[in-house]
Image (cartoon, rainbow, N blue to C red; front, side):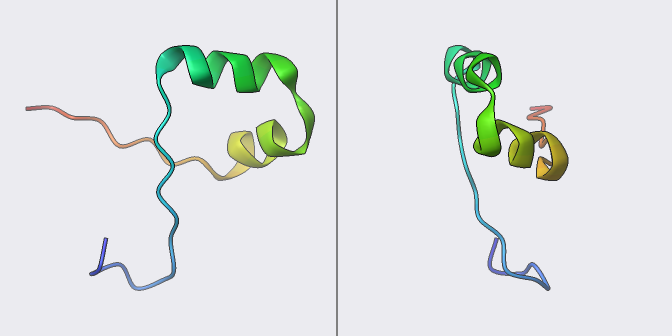
Length: 43
């Protein structure tokens, strides 16, 4: 995170939290749909 060339905010959700946010909709869900970058653990 400290090596990123731009400011960033890390948000970590469980799968159930993510589903609930998306189901509720609203401004936060819309922002997350637009701006989320998925990082996958391949280890």
